[in-house]
Image 1 (cartoon, rainbow, N blue to C red):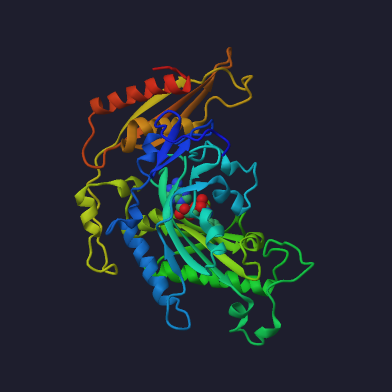
Image 2 (cartoon, rainbow, N blue to C red; image 1 turned 120 degrees about the vertical axis):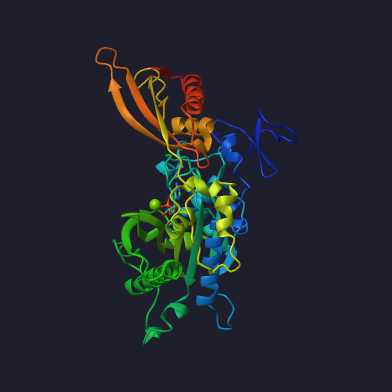
Length: 424
Ligand code: FA5
Ligand code: MG
């Protein structure tokens, strides 16, 4: 905020996103690759599978939850910019200044104060402050993360928030007029926040779990196996994750909980209690349509996209997997720069920097990167890592030659950009 005003600086000194210019500083770590995804808005692209899921969730909430006059209770927002302040993404959610989730290694910063949102929860506080009591919010979110079939640096979330006044929460309870939302002198326990009454929290938690169970049952039918896992978020307490059974394993599809009262107090809704959830649209779509790999959502291949072009959003989709072309793998090993605990006091090699580099060179051809070996030289103490990179093209069989070219570019880039010494 106190830097020079850059009016027409392009490229070097500033980052351009969605028609706005952001001055670079030592926090800037967005890459051209990730910026190229900003504005794609897959969730708003008609007939895209993520759009389809979003529309089905919308339709469910519109019809299942109506106000007194038959109007939808939940409003839906899907056009908020993914560029948010650090304050929105973290501070407004009570995430402490030194919390590990703020690490540049895990996030995409435009600069010290601005970032690509890491979750749709970044908008909770402003939406509540604007007076909304029940809303859904869909959007693209950005995280520097590992690379595999269910993790991609850009994915989509749907946030849901519902607030209750004392009257709304207790009106259906016998002698509800005698109950209250808040108590003083209470204690925080694994089940509730200090200022909440147990009866209020239990009703909110029950409504939250029932709402989400109804949602997934609506999407998947009765057969889906679901389980709740206790977890932790700085902005909800108690907090839960929902997992569903997928390909013989449990897959986490959403996080949720009773909103921290401090968040509501500072957003002008201190007289209410609320629940919130955030679900991964890709994860739901993968289970629903048996899409095996998260990269497919970015495919422009007609054979993929046309399968979702239905007249009616409730029409069942019979997704036929495009024939899976065989993978090829290549290993890369290198010595890390310097020795451990170098003087600068800052880690000179981080795993996510390497993942990022692999992805920016190899693009969507990279299916998976995994650490396969680690070695410390007994005399020099130098450390060496070996990663296996699995390459696969979604639309054709890769040749060893094609892969070798990309692999060599990765080897060179790792030496130049990360200062490692190749053992190629
Ligand atoms: C959150 O992002 C919280 N904001 C969720 C929340 C909202 C909690 C409101 C409480 C109240 P988490 O990081 O677990 O939590 O992500 C939520 C969901 O996004 C996950 O359950 C998963 O479905 C999806 N998700 C997370 N990381 C990825 C990824 N790298 N690729 C695809 N989907 C992901
Ligand atoms: Mg999680």
